[in-house]
Structures are given as structure tokens and as C-alpha cells.
Amino acid sequence: MKIDLLGSAKDMLPLDPVTVLLSIVICILLATILYKQKENVHPNYPPGPKPLPIIGNILNLNVQKPHLSFLELTKKYGPVFSIKIGVEKMVVLCGYDTVKEAFVKEEFLDRPMTPAFMDLTGGYGIAFLNGNNWKTMRQFTVSTLRDFGMGKRSLEEKITEESNCLVQMFKCYKGEPFDNTMAIHAAVANNIVSILLGRRFDYDDPKLQRTIRTVNNCIRILGSPMVMVS
Image (cartoon, rainbow, N blue to C red; front, top):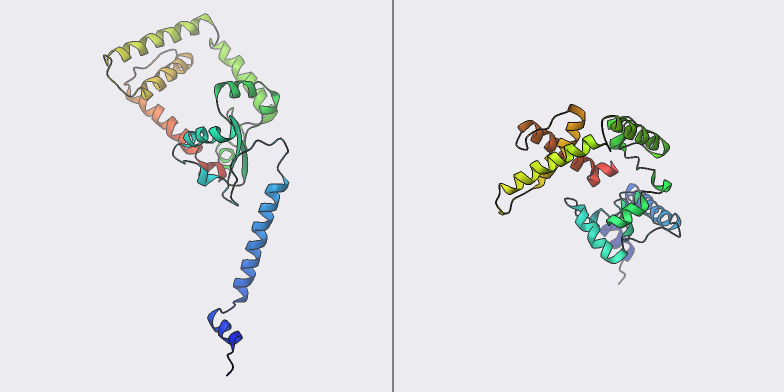
């Protein structure tokens, strides 16, 4: 009695040429990505969690609160570590002393060229410039702000006045717990507005609160991993 194992295997697993070709292409693509990940790592590149092909370390991050994930990673890799968001390599600095030490160096002039930011700004502005262009615009901005009073006694008086208003607002709660997020943001915004418009707003002013919420939402969206890799 003969059993046609080959014929049975063909009946059970039909081989579609398109499927086979697609599988081979995917395997080659994944192998190429894994090879490049190992090949392009600089000897002094900071340590970090092992990234997955295509998506990088997105699964290692809390998308809603990525800073909490960074704090957890510092416990294992130290205050300077690396991650990948999609195919973009990133170095994360955690802690005041680490950031202060790094950002006084010329090597940290570059900024990531995020497609969403480039489409939004067209490569102009201050926050999203890169390299020497950013350095030039920063010098121009600091010089202009000094003309408005930054670093002078007049601005110090406005900051002191705003601080007193913030303290008075805190005292209204008589030691009871409360959310001070909006109040802190409003105090900072008033310092900026006082330079540009020469006046301040009450913390409960609807225009000021709407502006702060809009700015916070924009920053939250632009800083999300999906936008960073788009």
C-alpha cells in the first residue's frame, strides 16, 4: 500500500507563487533592517532597550505619559540612553544636571527634522530650526527680547508682581489641595504677555485659559510618537 505524502502535502498547503514571493521579500526586508541596526551603531552610542523592526521602541513607551517610561528606563540604562521611534534614532537625557551639561555644547545645536513640523513651519521659525540656522535665530530672538526688557530691572519687577498674584491665588484655597496646573501656566503666560502687550490677565480670564489649553493641546499632539514618525 502506497501513500502519496507529497500529493497530500500539496492538497493541505497550496503554494501560491505570489504568496511565496511576498514572504521572501518580507524576510529579506526584515533581515536587511536588522543588519543595518547592528551595522550603524556607533561604539559610543548610548545603551537602550532593543528596538523592534519598523516600529522601534514604541511598545516600550507609555504613549499618554512617555516621561514616566523614560524615568523607568533611567533606572536600567542611566540618565543618558537611546531609543527608536519608528526608524528614527533618539538619545534621551534625563535629569537637570545631565541636560544642563549637554546643552551648553555646540554638538547639541541640531534638532530632529520631523516631517510634520517641516510641513507646518516650512523650515522657518525658532523652535524647529536646525544647526547654525537655529543658532542665528536664537541670537536674534534673545537680542530682540532684550529690547523688550528681558534681563532688565523692569522685567524683574513684572515677574515679582506676577509672583505675588500667584501667591495670593494660592492663599484663597486656605491650605486645601487643588490643581495648580492652569495657575502656573497662566502666571508664565502673563510674564510673556506683559512683555509683548504691556498688560496681564486674570487667571480666570476665559481668553487666557482658552489660549493656554490650545497651546498645551498643540504641544501634546506635536510631541506624540505618531507625529514624530509621520
